[in-house]
Length: 197
Image 1 (spheres, helix red, strand yellow):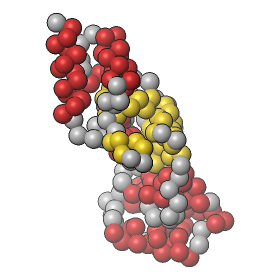
Image 2 (image 1 turned 45 degrees about the vertical axis):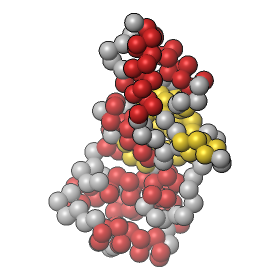
Image 3 (image 1 turned 30 degrees about the vertical axis):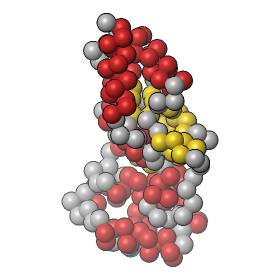
Image 4 (image 1 turned 90 degrees about the vertical axis):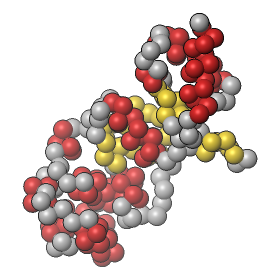
């Protein structure tokens, strides 16, 4: 019986596409402790890589090392499992929205779920439990835009940054939610965003 379980779980992992995340809870039919041991064993075999306690990913091995999915893809999967919301913060948000070309080595997200750190080779992904007010926005762009502008700082906003804000708002207008969401942004951001709508 045990061998059959090993084969079933191994086959599920082997057949999965690269980038799929496996949690101990991905195999609810089987005993948690047993699955935990098996996943640790499959990691030793190089079938999966551990990125946090009880969280593994099927990463692609190349001649240059292990290729992980993007931090955003991984965090989105974890949020789905935890039924949580996420918002990129700091340099991560600035990079995703095109304010900066620099891809941060350490990416950070606010979450309604629990705080945790993921390790992707030499990169770190931090999930930090955020205050409810960060998740009170109704639009998709505004929460991330607020985080990006916060990381740039009021005194450092350039004309290019303002142009970027105008482009983002033109590309993804949120007329139904913008008035509500502007009230949640700090006053200085509100002024900048308003003049670029």
